[in-house]
Structure formats: C-alpha cells, structure tokens
Length: 166
Image 1 (cartoon, rainbow, N blue to C red):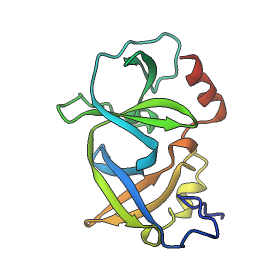
Image 2: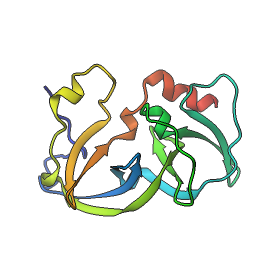
Image 3: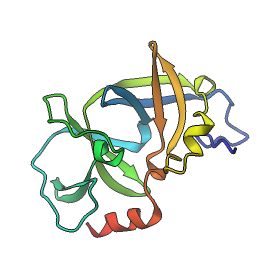
Image 4: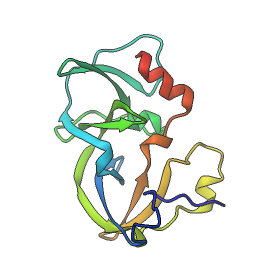
C-alpha cells in the first residue's frame, strides 16, 4: 500500500511541518481540507439548477460575476439528504485550478496541527474500490476523528473537465 502525504514535502522542508486545515461537519462527522485550498466560505445563496448534470452537482451560482459549480457533499458521499439549516455553508475551493463550491452542514474552525499527528487512513478504506483515494489521513481531534481530504483527488479527470463546461 502506498501512502501519499497530505502536503508535498521536499528535502528543504522539515518533516514535522505545521499544517492548517479548515474543518467542517457533514452528517455528524468532521472533515478537514487544507486551508490554502479554501478561497472563501459563504452562506447558502439561490442555486440555479442545471439539466443533465451528475446527481451530486446541485447547480451553479454567480459569485461576483464568476459562474461556479456547486457540489452537494452529502450526495457525493452517498449520505442521506438533509434540509439546509442556518449553519449550512458553501466552501468555495480551488480544485485543480478551477473554483468549485461544496455544500457542507457547517464550518467548524481552522485547526493547526503537525504533519506527524496525521495517521494514514485504514488500508481497507483505500482498497475497497469505492474511490476513496481522496482521504489522505485521519487526525484525533478533541476525542473525535477528523477525516482529512484532498479535494484535487475527489473527482476523476472526466469529472474535472466537465466542471469547466458547467
């Protein structure tokens, strides 16, 4: 099993680098993404539905003149749908050079951790053939496990190309 690092480390960088993660909630589980991937966090605007898009694509929004595709993280992960609440947010992230919005239940905080505190995900999660290679590690955070994701690996190449056409 090959374990890929969350942060690409070259020889000039210390092994125990400080990493900042934006944590968010999704179906009572806590996830984290690198803070440098997050461009902004916004409240739920009106989302324009698009025909003939994958089920997890909620639609598009206009953010200061730029059209951004919006992904339902619950649908993408195969979780039960939930009514939006006052805590529901869209995290606008840079995914392989394109801005994409992700609907999450709530945004928690920015967490600073050392890379040595991140444990690799269990091998059975990665070998299940269910496309979970975007999970890069797990961090024990306040008696809960924070699942660390790499959004660049969340979508196939075909899916990323289709976002450009949304």
